[in-house]
Image 1 (cartoon, rainbow, N blue to C red):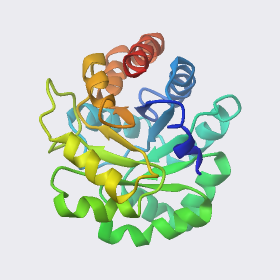
Image 2: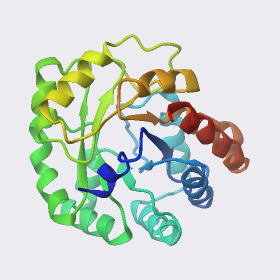
Image 3: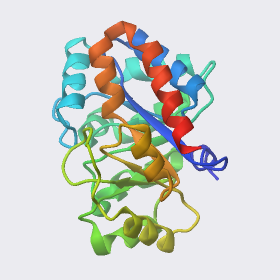
Length: 257
């Protein structure tokens, strides 16, 4: 059982996302430590990309700010190495295929494993193209996290059957971003995932921002993923955002206990 799967063994998992380098790498490192201390079970670290097609305006803006600040993949690996001195929760990279391709797939994954990363999420890689990444991930001991969306339909069980770490269930059509309500039939999606692969947890993301939404999702799934709400707080607060985000993570974790 991988470290990511183990994170689901003690109840519902809260998964937090942050764009590395927004507003700077020092703040990103402080955020990782604060979110882990506040109860985040898994933390997703975004490597910024110039064309983040799955992201809404909040995370797109964070990507732009980080890139304008000159952040690089190697600097983010160095950040992970540093926080691994005192952060034990699983850490997963979320980025886009071109970032990994341009770095070199084998080199990227070897370095990721070396600094202590546990998972890789590439939202622009469809199931049919996962063989470019999944075997290399397996060799490096890193879970390649699969995504299923409302549009996956009959493909959900096929994707889930080969999933590692956890299945990332996309709650809504469209890009990331906070939503006032989630209308997708998540119950049916989660049921299909569990039928196909009862040993791999499923977590729901895209659009979740309030404790009430988190509580509702946690009744159906094994974990709750929050990104845009945290990234918006970073954008609003800059270097002073860390304590507020710690309090927010505590509220969200409490809601799903």
